[in-house]
Amino acid sequence: MALLITDDCINCDVCEPECPNEAIFLGPEIYQIDPNKCTECVGHFDEPQCVQVCPVACIPLNPQRLESRETLMQKYHRLVAQAKGDAGAAQALPPAALP
Image (cartoon, rainbow, N blue to C red; front, side, top):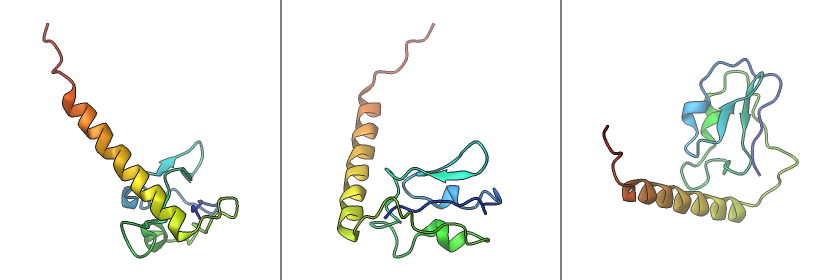
């Protein structure tokens, strides 16, 4: 299951830097979670870090995104592989030509 941030969010800014998958971002009014990147910290930590630091407890499970721990682990592996691929592609780019 992915997590979601409810309207109770006070925009305190503590959750975003805690997300190892960079799934949390500032939306038009409150912080939001990209369910395609949220693994509930599976693969990184035992507990979702955003939930641990949220002062108003506004980050429940998203009932629209019910995922098993196995599915979350598969998502984690996909995200890690994608990040490594992106890093490798960036290293392969030639330096920008200087004017």
